[in-house]
Amino acid sequence: MEILSLKNISFSSQNNSIVQNVNIELEEGKTTALIGPSGSGKSTLLKLSAGLIIPSEGDVYYRGRNIAHMNRAQNLEFRKESAFIFQDSALWANQSLMQILELPLRIHFPEMSNSKRKQRINEVMDIVGYKRDLSIRPASLSMGEQKLIAFGRAMLCSPSLLFLDEWTESLDDYSANRLITLVKQQKINNNTIIFVGHNLGIIEDLADHVVLIVGGQIHTSMTREQFERDKSLSELLKMSITERNLEKDSNEKSNKRKGKKR
Image 1 (cartoon, one colour):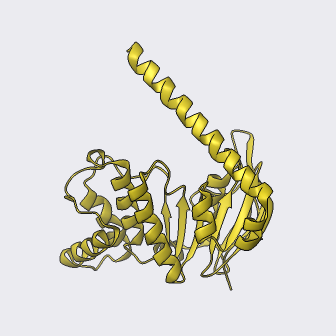
Image 2 (cartoon, rainbow, N blue to C red):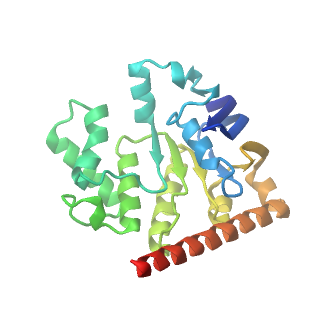
């Protein structure tokens, strides 16, 4: 049974077409990987799927209900049942980790006591493996620790639908493996997952379906088995990873040069 459906979705920004006439249905309890070259519109499509940005054309349906036409109560229920993990973690810089983690519980469980909120937060922090003080702010954390907090925040309300935007990007192997293990557990629990990624091993390990996005359009949609057999797609993905690494190295060198000039 489908849990999420995108019908004739297009999105433009500043007269630039980013996503064009996308149609896709996500089966409940399955994991879908969005892949493709850099700048192909994958992250934008993920945000459109989650209702974080509004399509210029078309509609997104969650369990048969148009997200754009939901009333406040329906939208709150959708937000409680889904969770989005951003590539940059998206933690508020001017709040403590405890304040950041308390917010979803305050919104979705307003009658929950302070002690119950802290108990739930501590439970989730144990699950994600975060051991440090929650009174500090995000700037005190490593990138890996920020991702753990972001993942923990997403898990607080026990969502059944997860959106992951390049969720292992820029992490060391330990932190990346920790998050992969957590996502695998969500998959075991039959939750629905849609993620943007470039790591061939993660895609082959987790995805039930693979959707190739090129130029803002769906180029190919296939099962994981079909993806593994299609060598041309594997090469395209490897090429995309190489391009991203070269771009990242170039940006880092540029930043270092700017730093020396100052």
